[in-house]
Image 1: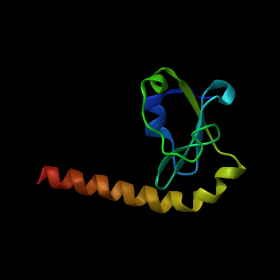
Image 2: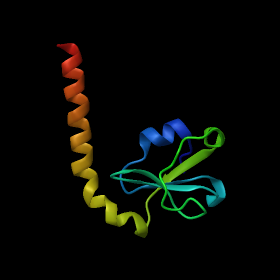
Image 3: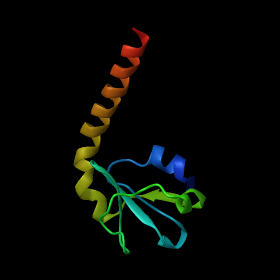
Image 4: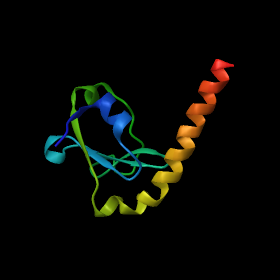
Length: 93
């Protein structure tokens, strides 16, 4: 199992994947429209980066609940890559 700090988790999590802290005290899911809380009092709300999150370690995984988002993953990642490449080309020009 691979563990990540918050910043590393944000850069590695893909559409349809979940990330949890040890003991599943905090769980998030990356959907096409952002990173959302799963369960708890914040369930369904957009994750806001707050101080307490920076000290957590996270693991990324997929489960049966995340399968519905997988069809968006390839198209979204292709579009994301194209946007980054276009920005890079614009800066180079």
